[in-house]
Image (tube, rainbow, N blue to C red; front, side, top):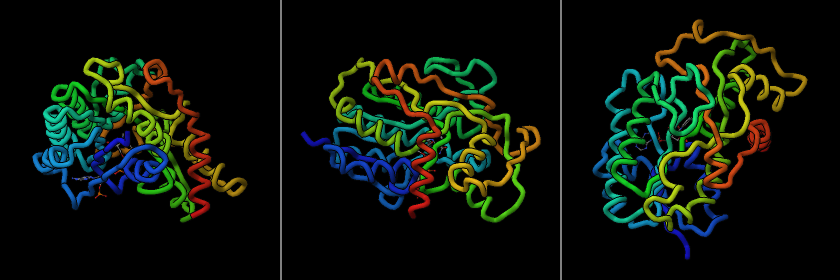
Length: 294
Ligand SMILES: NC(=O)c1ccc[n+]([C@@H]2O[C@H](COP(=O)([O-])OP(=O)(O)OC[C@H]3O[C@@H](n4cnc5c(N)ncnc54)[C@H](OP(=O)(O)O)[C@@H]3O)[C@@H](O)[C@H]2O)c1
């Protein structure tokens, strides 16, 4: 039976990949843009679920401006905590399964990586705190919900580190990139593929199914931002790759504090979903190829 999916978000990296890949699956995906419903109005978002009566809701939109969130605390909380909470209540009331996306920034990265799903959380910034509260609101309101934590999301579109690095390199300025923050880059396309491959299972699963709760999804392997920049240039520019100097978190001051090593463990993904993501370098190759083809 064709699955009805209601997606919040049309323009973000993940939202675009879900829309792109949906035709390869037995789903009808209806995606709502910010113009259709602003997540700053959680009650309006909840009404969309009641109206559409889908089999599965996917929250692919979020307040993702990590530094700006330090000053736009209320808006970040409304979009990342209250809206998912209201959507979750509507899902529970209509018997709809819910998939929410969260972040590795729920961890402080100060020790203990790779973090398992049940490891102690301690967000260092407002964005991470609002996403963690969003996870909790979703889980509390909707027993048939899954929070997928992901990290360092990149793709050939939208705003992300791959595109920023290539733009900076094209400008020809000397480059220094933070070398003491380490994590797992994640292809938005790979995450979208995982979500669509599990949509049927989630829509059919009963309360208490191990598919519900929280799971980590990221590409395999670990790298620093500087190492990632070097890989991006090697992949995109080959012999013309610029030198990438090293800087430190202490020297590169940003409004939001970021974890040094919030790398997430991927064991549960393998055990519960039977999925082992490919290495980030292979995913990067595909993204650079797509950028070159554009
Ligand atoms: N990007 C990362 O590195 C990263 C890392 C870890 C976790 N995540 C999580 O992964 C998920 C997907 O992230 P992404 O990288 O695809 O995000 P993104 O590219 O930054 O896009 C964010 C999306 O949210 C929408 N949005 C923001 N505020 C909204 C509002 N008030 N009402 C309706 N829509 C709103 C934006 O719409 P407009 O185009 O209208 O602004 C945009 O479509 C998010 O939950 C994010 O927290 C991302």
